[in-house]
Image 1 (spheres, one colour):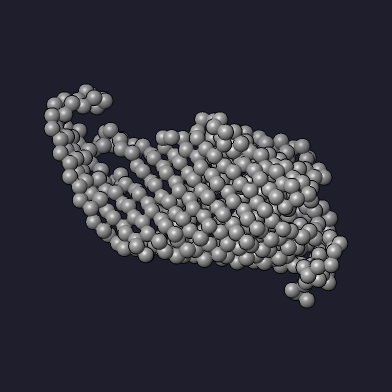
Image 2 (cartoon, helix red, strand yellow):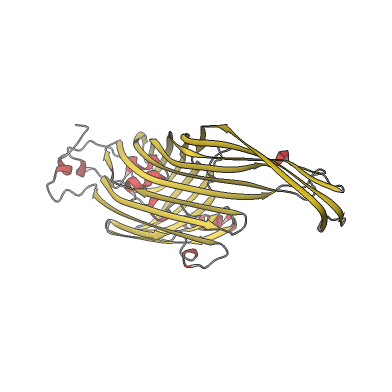
Amino acid sequence: MKKTILISLITMVIISSKAQEIQGLVNSTYSGLTGKVINPGSIADSRYYLDINILTTDIFYQTDMQNNAYGSFRLNGPSAMLNAGKHAFCIYDAARCAISFKKNDVVSTPTNKKGIYAYKIAGLAWGEIGLSYAYIFRTEDKDMWSVGLSLNYLAGAGGAFYTNNTNSFVLNNSFSDNVSNMNFNTGGGTGKGMGVDLGVVYQKKHRQVSLQTYPNLCRQRYQEYDYKLGVSLIDIGFIKLSKNAQKTNINGNYSDYLNGADSSLNYIYSDSDSYYSTSSNTDNNFSMYLPAALSIQYDYHYYRNWYFNGTFIQGLNLAKYCVRRPTMIAFTPRFEKRWFEVNLPLSTSDLKYFRLGLALRLWNFSIGTDNLLGSFGIGANKSFNAYAAIKINFTKGRCGKKHFWSNLNPLK
């Protein structure tokens, strides 16, 4: 049975086989508060009763040099997670930015026989301060259910977009080749907004679930699972850019008088041409949406310290002006112990680009990349990814030394 499940996970990646999602950090049972990046419900049942983040950073970019590009940066400063029985609390902050570029060919029509490129470009930089709460709301025999919610205040440091309205193009195939109503939208500015993350996690524990009350946080016991399944919505939110903001509409008209053209319109010979454009400020505020996504995570405890994780992330374009998050499918084998861990993320971006990563954790320090080969310039597309984390944490069931955190129980 175990071999069948393992082979199925590997096959899923190969046949459908991105990586700005720090796969080498977020899925571990030792992820602590970092796990909330992919699913806030995961912090309800952590190996740590206290996890303090000193610094976590992640930088990623990829481009095929033609039609697609995506880049993101994350810097998490001092943050803390406290786990107490059925409840978990987290306070955190981050500086983030993301940018996306997408070019599509518009299908030729009777009035547009050449086809025209459609562009969508968006960039957003923001800071966030948030609170997370997770709760184990149901236990029965070996089953455990938890839910988590993160509420984020967003301070937009800058945002901009560019789109062109391809539906308004008119291209007349005649002796006079006219391109009219070239409609573009651009905008930029700073502002503030709100964001939400929501997640649910189901676990099948190895033994019957026990959630007895302990006098001190450090005396809590972590119970191992056979497998767990999580579903989450992440980065659901927007920033209203209203300070020094400007939204502009550009209209253009281009006329090209033809001396001749071949039947396929591959070669055009012009005698004269003319071009004019007009622009107007349509608004002094607008909203840009975060790179929202739906995520599904499956984690399988294979044997002892061996785990296998499958993660799917589908970007959600919730509005016209948003940063586009690429689709990702990842399979991550890992070996983990309290003081040491190694992850080998295998993933794809937009179901096209294959990634091989490597991440290591030694005590409280982690370093890794979800794109090992691409970061060294190997591969069909240009890309780079690296992340690192420094934390201080306290493991459940270890009360060797007397200290403030061991004696603390906020729910007494």
